[in-house]
Length: 178
View (tube, rainbow, N blue to C red):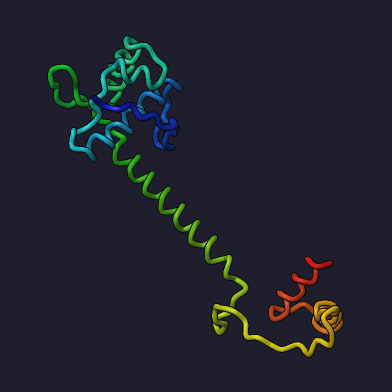
């Protein structure tokens, strides 16, 4: 028994730009998707029945049959072999859609990589990653006082007069503490 998996119907630009009605574009997109999956899985193309295709795109079985006939005549679909209860359909846009998906995924990876590398923009090439070295700020005279107030005043007076890449961390920390 096969499990029906539903995907969002995303129509490739190569199909979307064709001079076809919306329903025909959806049907051709579904046939192309199943053709791609069928070739990957060794079936040779789309082996779905008209009834199944109709259920997937919201068309009657007879309408699917009519649209397939018309798209075969127009050259968008090639009929392959017939195996008893099903026929193999191949989309003439198979290679174009596969190439479009490849380029989309490649662009997506490039965008992801550049956005990840932009988070490290504050690090310079000579800066190493890891914790900053400990710098002693001075002795604490009693338990009631803390160095935070003194450090905050010192940061405000010295380093916040001019914001540079070296003191941007202290500047942002001071803004958050205000």
